[in-house]
Length: 207
Image (cartoon, rainbow, N blue to C red; front, side, top):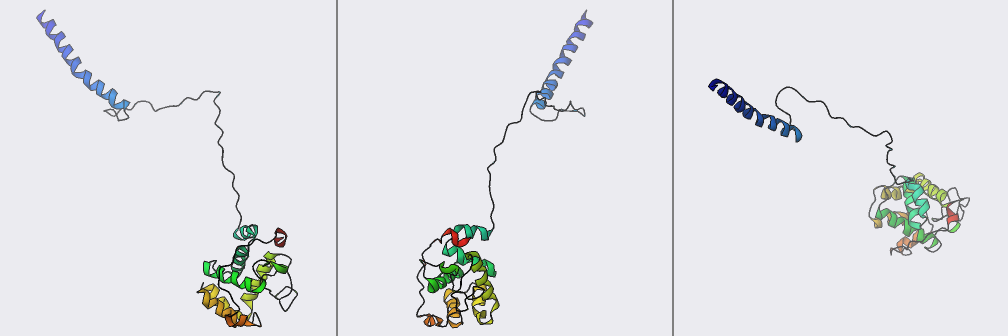
């Protein structure tokens, strides 16, 4: 009888000693930690109902245009000045754009800068050697102005100024000294350096 009681007591003590370890293992596994020992439980699985359908995801549409297309769409005198610079491969910087828009103003005035689709009164490819010719579009005029400036030997200093994005005074002095205008813009006395207003050309001038 005594032996049976001692055996039963030992069994109860052993069970009590094992209980915390089992509880710890269960708790650790619940919070994502590895349970003691080399054994691992089964991997996780996810069941999806047969009638489940994926949610539709809205995505915003977008369009992309090249730099030249964006400038043509803008349609202003500043856009045309930038188009010439792009066609010539020169940096589109504030100083370069300022000089180009001032140059356009000296040739046609700001309010009618698209006159004959020839903002710089360029004779190259326009059918008018004196610069009074015209182009089919302002985009063509920009390409022809860029090609003329890049080709003719008399414009080497203008090219260098735009390519280096030199100070505006340096580029303008090169324009005055060049054969672009027979008047040479009065060596600068007929040249305004005030800001040029932004003016949009009629849409038909671009197409």
